[in-house]
Length: 257
Image (cartoon, rainbow, N blue to C red; front, side, top):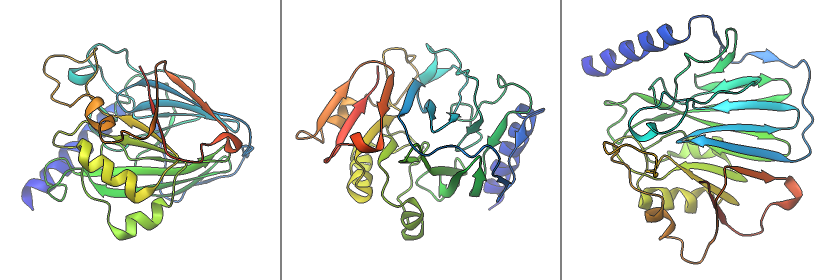
């Protein structure tokens, strides 16, 4: 109990240091101005690791900005002009906020938020396989944008509990960690999550790439892909464009890079 409290205090202090001048959104915030249309194409641009620029429906959001180091050593820090930022924890590989413009709206806590006509559901999960005692809390994010239901699981490692499963629903696009380690699903664990959530498109994240440093202990994405021999895999590039009427009828996997 004492160790967990120390982790929470340390992480809270880290976020406080990095978010000076940023607008951290309170739980159940309400901002229905400039309501975004819910149609048209949705574009996901991958910055590496778990970070994406997601554009569509009149909104632009950035997820999980990181500080280049270790598994992200060969990548530039994500930067984009966005309406808001979502992070899943206060760790520097998924919640680095120092490079953001002042007053950027940041969603970092579990809860339900309404912002510019979009509802964001932050779902609390343990970040590791030992009840959060090592890495604290992970926030999975569920929302609908441009008519597409999205779920970004951050770098979750803990099994999905029944109440979490209800909040997650059935996503059209599932952004899923697959590289293993102490705070991310292994390939087999990620496969089980795909089976449970039954998405239409899976976007693997949080795995070792050619730009990762030698200290990166994550597994490559091919270990995950090997578990889906009969699923269509689209590889290459850094962007995905999809619309509600072009979603695949059966599971497909989109691998960037």
